[in-house]
Length: 313
Figure 1: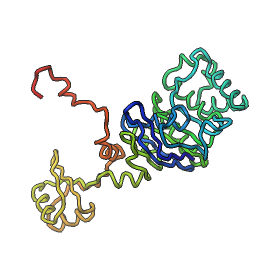
Figure 2 (figure 1 turned 45 degrees about the horizontal axis):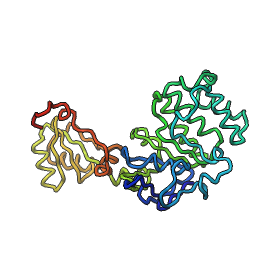
Figure 3 (figure 1 turned 45 degrees about the vertical axis):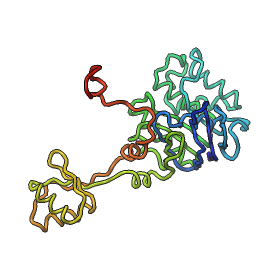
Figure 4 (figure 1 turned 90 degrees about the vertical axis):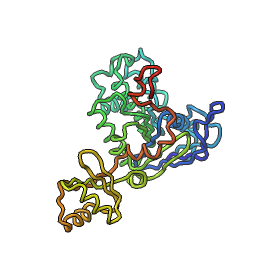
């Protein structure tokens, strides 16, 4: 279990993390989301003792990570996959880490097999592709068979098979009763992986709830209605107090009744329907809605950015 109380990190006058409280519980995958610059990586670095809090505290299994006599056997972390000696082979990189924590050599071969690096374990890690480096970083995180696993953007550089493997790995570790804390910018993947979400923006916790509750609270849903009698259908629904928005391709987006009730209402009025579909917003939609005011770095519209200097925008 990971527990933070009033966790704060200042860099000069800037608060990277601003007095946050949270608990990451065992037995589930907790996703950690936030825009760039929100404080995710700083928070993860404080969990494993790489950054010292300005105020507050964070503990792992009841104590500071730095107080653990064999850290790799308690917390496995992937924060920077390239944190290795480029001249060492993948196997030797794992062997010296194992030796430093009293982990037997046989475990090295087990994690090499687990992450799929058997054929390249003797090669210099500095020559690895981004995806292979990520697999080696995950091997390091799992080396001590830890009860707590912290993964920062673990699917960077992985192909679809690798992304799916990480998803299944995270869920299996949680099913074994471990504490699994994962950050990612891939919302579609996080929606398939996480049971619980922590969302941070400008150093503060914006949401701490289950995946289903987060989407229900922060996303919208509507019924897509298409009819050859669009105008009459829209007027009918408006007269019944429903929220109706007209979109391109003659699509009506209706809120206020479920699809079955809308279908019955339109049908009993003698109008025809060509489509009646419930559309639920995605995790990405919910995340964007919640963090819209917390984005520190945002790109400008492509057309505006491409306009010549002096052109009206």
